[in-house]
Amino acid sequence: MRRFVSQGGFWVGALAVIAVALPLLVSSTFAIDIFIRILLFAFIGVAWNLMGGYAKQLSLGHAAYFGLGAYTSTILLIRYGVSPWIGMLAGGIVAMLASLPIGALCFRLRGPYFAIATIATAQVLMLLFLKFRDFAWGAEGTTMPNLGDAPLMMQFDGKAPYYYVVLVLLAVGLAITYWIERSWMGYYLVAVGEDEDAAEAIGVDTLRIKRNIYLISAFLTALAGTFYVQYIYFIDPNTAFSFNVSVEAALVSIVGGIGTLWGPVIGTVLLEATSALLQSWLGGGHGGVQLTVYSLILIAVILYRPAGLIGILTAAYDRVIAGTKRVNKVSLDG
Amino acid sequence: MAEALVIRNLSRRFGGLRAVQDVSFAVNECETVALIGPNGAGKTTSFNLITGHCRPDAGSVLAFGRELVGLRPHEICAHGLARTFQVARPFGKMTVLANVMTGAFLRDRRLEIARQQAREAIDFVGLAAKEHTPARELTTIDQRRLELARALATQPRLLLLDEVMAGLNPAEIDQAVALVKKLSQRGLTIVIVEHVMRAIMAVARHIVVLDHGQKIAEGNPREVVANPDVIRAYLGTGYAQPAAAGESHC
Image (cartoon, rainbow over all chains, first blue to last red):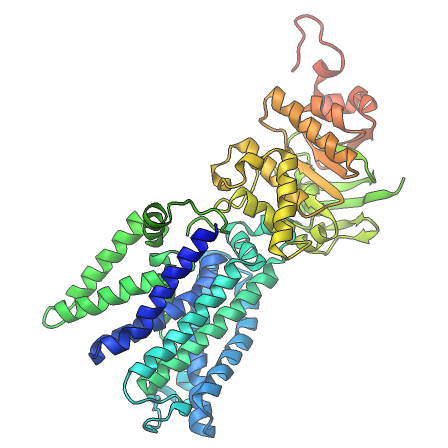
């Protein structure tokens, strides 16, 4: 086992070196923008995956927390001059507080009904921010004050610093997932995902574990929201509470491998890279062609690899590099 | 002897169906009690009412001096009552070891301790060779063994077994009987729902008979199998008196 762990550590280390060196090697801002989007959605996917993947609580309303994070830091910044670094944490806390009543309502439902209820929560929040103009600029939104190169206010010259911020976020998300996967919590989450009644019968407080993982997931998603609006310098309800964010969070995890550490990362790399490349090759002139190809790829993955692409990669890794079968893991779909 | 479980006037209806009606019985500590009766008699519903998976309309369940009605299943498990399900419900994508560790985490959250506890339970039910097999790949019998191990890993004082022997062949039934006896010798109180009379006669000190949600008889095994009501409702006349030639009702 030790050999396997150190080998795994080696590959993660190599990946980290490449990730850190990437902005130094690539000068194109277009490419770095794509990398930032990949890391951001991988991070949102990781946050979603903790709850949607391990515990199989398929939320389609994570935009609620993305938006709350974005609005909390923006209101604090513009109204009170508070640095978005602090606003980011405040947004995380607001999202956690919001997840308590939302969870209390939605966790009464199971399966597709849970998913529908979560969609509704994100939509309700979007409507609130659209209609209450005095509260937060209403439908027209607002732009961030441009402070130039102000690292303490999460504003930077050029795109590379943003890249590193979101890289750190992703690393934190992965570290939390790694830790949970290897503790009792990971076992409890997978047990809840497999069979809630059977889990209760052996002493798992299913409501509590679902609430706790929702808190963590909401907190992380809110951090992504703050980062995103700081990065694009603009916020409005349609951006912050976009249904696309909710869908993308679920999609990258499902395509990559639901309930696995690296699934959301693999899924995002594939989907975002494909989408960006298709857009640049096919986007101009032929309206809709790139979306059609994108959809075909999605359909193919779901049809032929319902457990996600990570299965192909880990099987190849085990066979070619490690030469072992993995055994000491909670879930076997990794 | 102290009473481990006292059930008083337990009732539950599902719409117009009285699944369990005014059932009372008690189980002494370290005793093995069997719950028998025809299909639909309310045996599994009784288990669900005792373990909190379903809330009774009336009545009380006292276990080791504590009222269980109103508690959630995980609290009841923490109080020392573990159950198996009639149709085994393993966590399919986990290995045997991970399944049982999930049970063991109830008493100790540390990975190493839980793994050690889980291995003991897995050894006990005879699944040690399949520790790393995914639960979904086990045979039905092994899935039952796994479920028993998972329940044992929660370190219960009272074990409720719901038809653990259904579908087993005679040799496997003997193994299962030996296993239940071994558990009883360890000081566990056991309530067992079963249709295999041979097994019940071998393990139970006391039998409670349900029919249409009501208790129709209880007593020691010999009394119960001779009881005319029990013969009519469940056993069939062929069971009590060895059937005369050409007169088998089984």
